[in-house]
Length: 476
Ligand SMILES: *Cc1c(COP(=O)(O)O)cnc(C)c1O
Image (cartoon, rainbow, N blue to C red; front, side, top):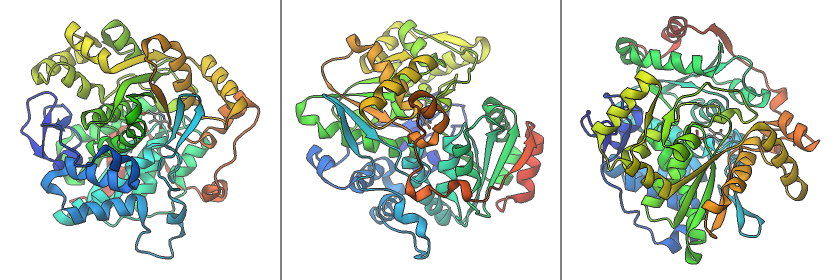
């Protein structure tokens, strides 16, 4: 299986190269040259273990880069078995069975709980696979990496849980000072692992992301530090996330297609749903639920993709103004015209926006619908939904509220709502909406007793580079 750039100006690469590189050298994102066959019947998708579907999916996308045995080992470590050290008690509570439970909440409405991993957000599902996948790739190549990650909260905790203690990796997490919840911060700062460094940056999330981009743009630094990223454009994350869409969709496949409601920021999770559809999963519409950072809802509803000012909301993991993975679906909507994508993104860089060509917009609207939700609607939705069910996190509530806004656009299909974080990750907001703060699950109930460890830096790329240069074991 080979991977090509969405901007058409870079040579094709293998699966592992696409995963480790992150971005293509022409500035585009990697996508598979063709959509593979899964090699698993719909019945098997529903009735075999989560790990079996993950294994088939990974095999289909990795091609010759991973052997059957490699894939089994990776998936076992991510979702099934304990790590080698039997004294490591943390694994036992890593996932309940099944990994992503589907629970009926109302007639025709289902909640797909994606928050049962170690750091309580859906980011764990993919990141738990990325950890062993990176280890395997680095062992094969006998090399080390400095992994950097800018986070608005959940990616950081998931990356720490997945990469802590890994011999060939040093992880550097950049997080905006004072902009993440205390629970989110503690999942990053309390690992105690020597290969994990958390940098509290005196700036906002955009400042963190700008520093990461500046480090990758410095070719000499990036090469010497063996820099790699685990942000949401990472292809392995997309592949891993397509697994729960497939299982949930096939569960109702006999009854017709299923619609999904996806709380959306960087468009990684929603795009994974579209990938599942390419693999044959019976999926109708994928509904993009955004908060007031509504670039995707505006793009789909007006045809203009235009950057706005970023706004802090009650669903912080979706406070994103440029949805990185949108480039991948635009490439498909333009019938894989890489030059066309490059032209539109040049316009975005120059003037802050572009018009989606009408034929492409029509194709996007065949697969997606979208609606924005504000903070007041989020709180109201959290309050009413908690009256007859367990409370949901603010991101999940954005999904509930968005669905009610576009009910006409959707069919009578069964609807699966993605629950992207555990409510206990956002106790202040849940308490404000429902009057009660949800307790942390037993596996992490000691989170507030653990010792925190982090360093503070100015929002300055040179300061962060020096920090990494002095500490990365990959530096050469
Ligand atoms: C990251 C995140 C999202 C948004 O996912 P994208 O893949 O960036 O669209 C939604 N909810 C939660 C809780 C998240 O952590």
